[in-house]
Length: 129
Image 1 (cartoon, helix red, strand yellow):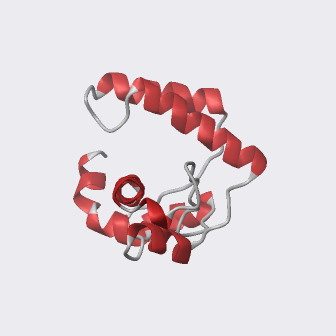
Image 2 (cartoon, helix red, strand yellow):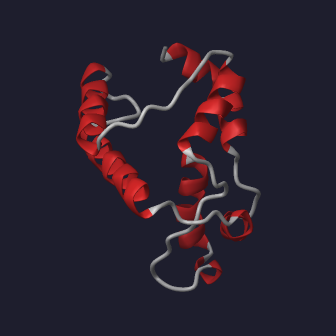
Image 3 (tube, helix red, strand yellow):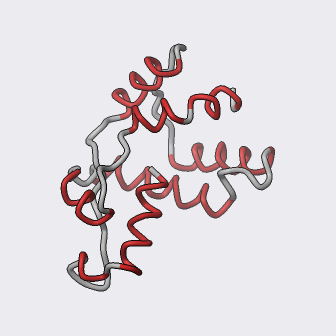
């Protein structure tokens, strides 16, 4: 999640000895496919969430539209391009394997699971319906 990613950046600045070199591509904490994510969202939000595959360009358009309708929100046009490119890369090459222990050693605490993040941000998800 974003908090874990931010803490990796902070750790790189404050604890560079935790890293193997100047460039770090830490793996995530969990291996979840889109259907797993939809199931967690369904369980935690109490409404049916499903996954439907769409193209990178269609996703980018949806994200760009979201950024236009919610200026200053979580998604901006640059983020829309980045997220859709990463999504396509994962779809074509596969996601890197998860390594919760390695991520924990970088940030100095257990990573936040998707389920815990959704549970913590439940009101945010409800507000964006």
